[in-house]
Amino acid sequence: MSYASQLLLILPELVLTIGALVLMLVAAWGGQASTRAVSWASVAVLLGAGISLLGPPSSGGEAFDGLYRADAFGTFAKVLIYIASAAAIVIAPRFFQQTSGDDLRPEYPVLILLSAVGMGMMVSAGDLLSLYVGLELQSLAAYVLASFMRRDQRSAEAGLKYFILGALASGILLYGISLVYGFSGTTIYADIAAAYAAGTSTGLLFGLVFVFAGLAFKIAAVPFHMWTPDVYEGAPTPVTISFATAQKVAAVALAVRVATEAMGPALLEWRQIVIFASLASIIFGAVAAIGQTNIKRLLAYSSINNVGFALIGLAAGTEQGVASVLVYMTIYVAMTLGSFVIVLQMRDDDGVPVETLSSLSGMSQTRPGLALALAMFMFSLAGIPPLFGFYAKFAVFDAAVSAGLFPLAVIGIAASVIGAYYYLRVIKTMYFDAPAPAFPRSGSVVENGIIAVTAAFISPLGYFAIPLLGGWSVLAARALF
Image (cartoon, rainbow, N blue to C red; front, side):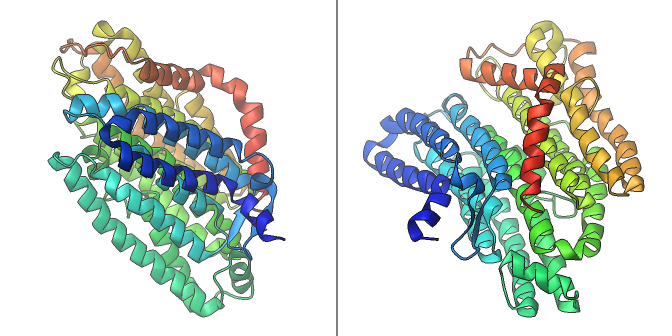
């Protein structure tokens, strides 16, 4: 394959990289006045990257001697990543203007683009080193984004915690990579799979454990979840949206590709790790959320809980299991995005963000439309039919049962009842408690549009998307097998 043909396979990353560099220069020369133009140009760059996925970047195979894989699986994940990243950009100006006292700086959308480049490399990596480079590119941008509000103590604390714990997780992952390389002699996924197929030595087994430990941090799975509540609460809400949606999709897709492509022959070994992380995340995320009084922390534990359900699909280790993970993450992104955009609208009369659950009291009377949307998101996150979140859980449970993991599915279903408690508590607060002071209406067409679209998607109308979503997810999963 010629060099030009290989560059064509990485066209989405090239579009994002060139766009980010150009917009960085525009931001440097234009200063604060260029923020609006840079933000909308960044959305256009993400749109261009999405369009460039058509053709070879979605089915072209390997590039650069196996370092990069252009396939349907990577395309599926990148579409979700680009949509979530664009949402994190378009909702940011109003938040920063009202919260930090000054307009959004133009570096913010540029950092989102650079993070998207890293996430694209993560989901398309065919080699452990390209995986690590993509992971670090995404992480470095994320550390800065978490502490973007320099005068806010919580934001600075969130960035510092994320940096320290992220560096620790990167070290664990890199140590695992070194063990896998040392005992297999390669970092290419296909060759690593051949080494595991020949026999799992003690060194390869330890390498597998450390690699999955590093990946567990990135997907915020128990027991490597400790950073999630503090970072989600302290980071600016648009940044939290990026963490909970785009970066979550990238990390889960990365874990799925490594598990199936690089370590597929060691299914029995890593399945035990995934099952433990899955059940621990489901149960801990549900129990720890019960006592939360901050809505962002509650959604952080909800994120931990939901990644546990997604891991049930991965534990199946089958094509159907991978497809169910992709379906779950698609619906999860819609539910989480809508929930956090509603959090953006929780402000007092002075425009100061209000994040306590008690502030939602009686919202069904003061803001009935907003209360209905949040109730739909909570019911859907709990997996209660007929909302679309029920289908997400059904897909992963069905994959687990088909793979012979009936006890896992039963425990997962039973544990989901625990999680329903704190979701229903939010709804009870909105509909049955005495009204608190009403949130002023935002008047933001962008925010209201996102809430309306995501609410429609997770409503029973979403079931009409099953043929398209199911077919695309199966096609994407097949690319890994």
